[in-house]
Amino acid sequence: MGLNKMEAQPLTIRPSADQAIVWANDRLYLLDQRILPNETVYIELQSAVDTARAIRDMVVRGAPAIGITAAFGVVLAARDSFRAAPDSWRDRIVTDLQALADSRPTAVNLFWALERMKRVVAEIGDEDPEARLLQEALLIHQEDIAANRAMGEFGASLIESPTSVITHCNAGALATGGYGTALGVVRSAHAAGRIQMVFADETRPWLQGSRLTAWELAQDRIPVTLLTDGAAASRMAQGGIGWIIVGSDRIAANGDVANKIGTYNLAVAAKYHGVKVMVAAPTSTIDMAVRSGKEIPIESRDPAEILQCGGQRVGAAGVDAWNPVFDVTPAELVDAIVTEKGIVLSPDSEKMAELMAR
Image (cartoon, rainbow, N blue to C red; front, side):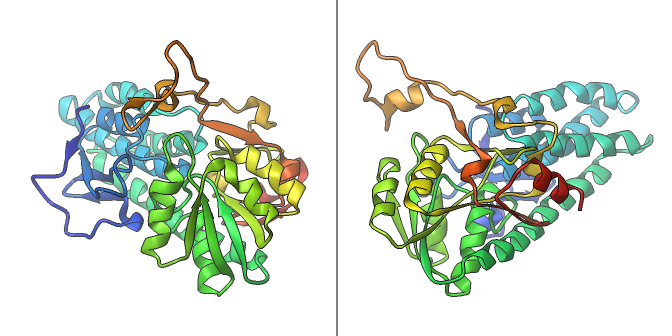
């Protein structure tokens, strides 16, 4: 892959979900989420090409985390371009920026972060661009953590009495700059004594729920029980579930939500069982240029991801597989969208526009 496990200059931090993206030793380190929870290993990235590959290959995942990682990738791209050709580094950087943009199509935070970094590129004079771009990437990282903590408090305020919740995929510190979106709400609500149990969908085929969400919650000593994806509706029928709490990779202008495949199933079942649905995501995830979820590009991945398990084929020979990474939950199935700017109840186009105008 061209991605190197950290060896030459070891980090002096303990691997944790809140330190999944680290800039140190003048390079970028990512906690390799493909091998959690069995191993906690950092991958060292020294180029934009390596960064794009790490995003594409799921070393890092989660919309906010992808955006932050791409911002640091721009820093690496500028460094290489300026060293190679100080007088034409802006021309040389274009290819690297495109490689970063092409790494994942659905997470709008990726494009938001790249556009923000491009604006800084346009402002820089003849000097070495690395320091100024690094300052902006670090700011994007810090702002995301602050936004997550604000979301945590807003979301926790909606949970009025102790209850259990169901999550899908991973929207914790690993998927963000730190603290988490959906799991940020869970962390804040648990600290306030309002979470009895978190039921985490395992989330096929990459098992982000069982490998990542359950690991994060266990690290924070928050009670967690794993569910197969197909068991969530049955668990709701047993009672005691107050909320479904998930993140998002892109939210349309009308409040439709793109998130990990299976979120739509969960929202439909929640509607039937009278369970509320909360989506926690920063405003950088809201794409006002997309009118509805029908316009959101949905990434598909290799069918082998669901035809195999643990390196062994489980699908019958000659059988193909449909492997979309995300689905779209219509706004009418969402009770609350929680952002760092506040809460939108029963989202629609008018309410989303009002939020974004604040």
